[in-house]
Amino acid sequence: MSAPVLELDAVSRQHGEGATLVQALRTVSLRVTAGELVAVMGPSGSGKSTLLTLAGGLDAPTAGVVRVEGTDLAGLGPAGRARMRRTSIGYVFQDFNLIPALTAAENVALPLELDGVRTSAARAAARTALEEVGIADLADRFPDHMSGGQQQRVAIARAVVGDRRLVLADEPTGALDTETGEDVLRLLRGRCDAGAAGVLVTHEARHAAWADRVVFLRDGVVVDETTSDPVESLVETGA
View 1 (cartoon, helix red, strand yellow):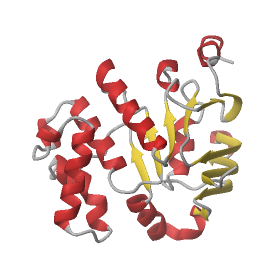
View 2 (cartoon, helix red, strand yellow):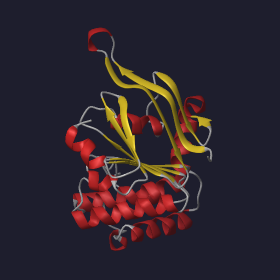
View 3 (spheres, one colour):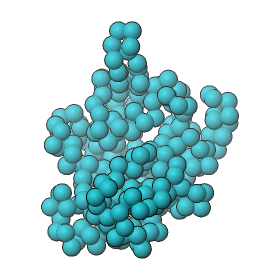
């Protein structure tokens, strides 16, 4: 088996203490290799988004280790983790996280420019990414002048621009109609087929069908994993 792009090794995450202690994740282990798209499913509060924020270096585990391409994220420090998110990790947030004062192309190009890519090259790459998600004509529009679905596609373009080895997507089709959502999943699938590793948080079994493997969380614990069609039955039974 090839070395994993993403590895969570016995990862736990606690919030609060004493009577307010919440165990968001409990000794979760997960490996995602290049070319693989893994869907993470589970009810609200099961730990899906926590898993993704840890994988993206946006939060640190209480216990265990998170590695991206063999590098322990905790050992990088804040600046090192930020650099990795600019260069290697693409993250699609539920709430888009676009900068209102920047156009669509500027939002998408920003991670590249912050990493030293020339503005002209970064903007060209941004426009290519916007074309991939079907909104090249909105490159010069500001987020406040876009629909929620259009903003979501800008956020997705920002997550896949450049050479991202790991793409993390938290309910990336939530603001999209069915047809556009399928286009986005096709794009994520294509990026993984081209050699990236992907993790998709979703509550929809039909979206999980795009994945190679599905991990099911409940109360911060991995309770099942499948590579075939029983995802529908898992969702229906709450297994």
